[in-house]
Length: 403
Image (cartoon, rainbow, N blue to C red; front, top):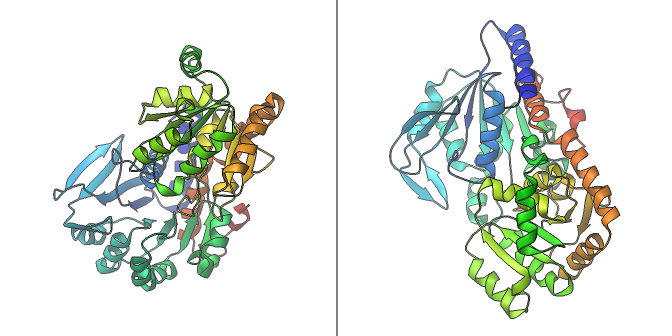
């Protein structure tokens, strides 16, 4: 955490302690997994825990990767990874989570969804007291599981004092959240932006020397909803070089597609890279592209990383938080999903216009600073906790934060 973030956290902690009681507010976060197990929600939970650890008495409860329960402290955050008895539809089933929730003396339980096992454990625990829910995304592909679980999910959302969504778009478009709008509060994800703002010039020069100029960057797992197929097809109509950071089950298929289309020499699959290489790629790139094609891409947090590096973004007009993060004709360009011609046109427009790239890149860095910093996210969440404890979770003063 930066000095400024520590100062903000200390001030928040003082306000929390003086206005609630003589001890810090106790909050139990219940997630699916926690790093080093990687994933979007896991990364967000880690960033959130780092930001809250100096303000609150914070504890994290998640599933273990095996049948062993592990209690540890990760970066000053107490984390309990309870044993996983079995896994169903990619969801860990952890009977021991019930007793952990029941035995917690937390003032607030904060559950991160989707996570059916956590919700079931919460109800089985007989827990009373304020419940806050972070609703990260709808259940998209596992429709049968979603249909079976929906009544329990809605019961939990009705039971909650507040529901956090990362964008106003998702509150409006989600068939689940639209039924609980009076409880919804928009708190966008925040990142440590200072970590992406600058980079070693020598590392940037090395990337450009290796791959040339007119660089296009995309970051994400190689899975269906990321839309990499359409981005690769767009390269047949684009004079540039595409760098793809990430790995996944579609790598061999996408590699074959690039060869088939005759663009393999201009499409480079870098796989999983270290943080320094990833940062150098952000700064070496001329533009960043997120070509996602389904609501499974609920927010697109990698856009914030690119924006913090001062890069214009090309994204897709999904009915999710993606176009909320980077705004069309402000911080980049937004095109229809699954349209490689529109992608190619937007990419070419930016590559051919350095002035427009600089204009959008500057606006992107400013928007990241104004809306997506860790400090702002932490402040909003602590304010929400206080409103919940004051009985103002519904229709609270935080509702004007929606944009």
